[in-house]
Image (cartoon, rainbow, N blue to C red; front, side, top):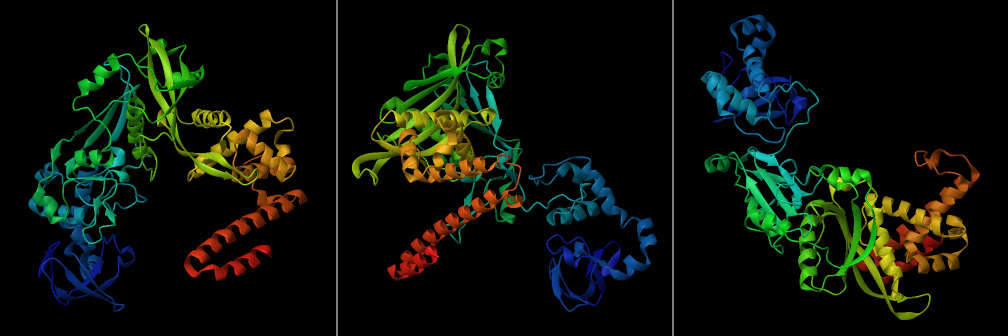
Length: 537
């Protein structure tokens, strides 16, 4: 039998379920205990369902209903409130679930056992009834909350620092499922450490990196084994994810790197004054950052210096681009454009990386001119560091790619590899502004037929898919709908109704083409006629 709150619970006792977190719909339901095991009770509910629960999740129904004042008076129900007050007076991390031994010493043995049961069930009074239940395993910490990146320009410089709360640490910290080797578990978690901290420090110019891992204490391996867990090998995880990078063994090596003169790798392709908002983000410089500028450099990743910098840039891709794959260098087809903030500090120019793009050049066939000596520039990665985002730097990098392509007559157009929705939105706005400013007739020239689209694409190195998107923008502009906060579906203008239907028809056609490709791959070419007939209708 089990003693709980002064009452003896045995087989046949009538109980009420409380405190269930996995199946909250069963709380307050009543039933009979029909079986017992070492640490579980089997309860058959009045509705006929059987459930196995911990003793802490049951109360005698009679005691709860009839003897409530007496139970509160002798402290059996006050126990939960007292423990809740102790716990809420010492706030804990939402994602770190460590047993607090100091609290256990402050209360008697019975309270400690009750608190342990509550902690295992994830029960604690937080004061926030809407708090989302934490499903992370015990002794774990969210990596997004403890990983920081810092770029320093000198030994005494605080540098530009940012966290990875919106980063993609699941690409670095994870464990492979032993049962299914292709499945990852415990993603974004650092397990087995109290208050872990991971800091990656770069020389702001050359990007010479060093990383450090610290923690207050290490959880006993015996406690982890009880939960079928192991310590996360943080150092090995970072090194495996960025095995191509030359991390410094000591922070002093990064400091020494900042003392050396640095010039960005490659050819200067653009320079303009830095906005005041960008200068203010450079901490610890005071008025020395005034007069700063932004510089764009282009290089091909086929020399020792360019390959070294390209690989160091890829360490940022791992943290900042979801499913971001690293480029393989040296390769004369990989083009990299970097954007640096340059400032005069103590009679020397110091640089801090703002962002970069990578693009790959590959062969393409010109179906309009029937030429085979053309190539295409595919933009693969675009990274702007979080402190500098939403300052127009991504559009500057995109224009630099267009400028590079327009300077080479063999480059047919510029495409983007699997653009994210945010990047595509930025690209649409940047391209529309560029055409509106440089075309004599503005965006309206996009509505003059296929020949006009081809000519504009050749001139500005825009691919046909992007030109069609911009033509849609021109249609909306012509119809008078330029407010992005207005839903086109609510407008009653005849021109917009026709436009909506035309765009939906084209999108439906594109979806059918994609469906047709899938049918061909799975069922053979006999399905093509069906898709073509649907598309024509």
